[in-house]
Amino acid sequence: MAAIQKFDVIIIGAGPAAWTAATYLVRVSVKTLVIGKQEQSGLYDAAEVWNYPGFIQGIAGRELLDRMMTQALEQGAAFVKNEVTHVEEVKPEFQPATGRFYVRLADRQEFYCDNLILAHGANYIKINL
Image 1 (cartoon, rainbow, N blue to C red):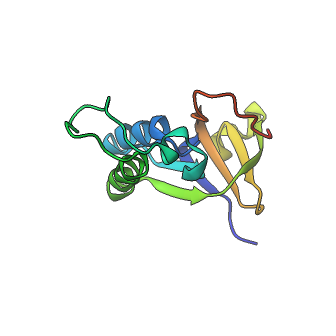
Image 2 (image 1 turned 90 degrees about the vertical axis):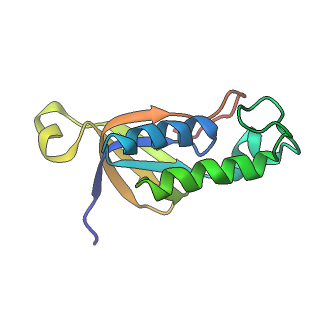
């Protein structure tokens, strides 16, 4: 059985908010994991985005999302394309060794983290936690 990996921050979601947060976090040396599926982001299917700074001619949503992901990953973020099925706060007496939160994925991968960011989108999406 593999050891459970620990991160400073786990971000649940793989849309623009998740990748923006990851980019800022890794730039200040925070060990960061993003967990999610980009195709579930509302931006993923946008034919053209015209209201994003720096793209005068617009940009396809999928391309913009891919660029955000690439930037975060190249700067040191980790990414797991999967679904989070369980999150729980760890009992205080175990937190120094493990982390404040325990996260389990659909494929049974397990992680610990000190901080958790929920970035699951602006639209109502039922997350199965």
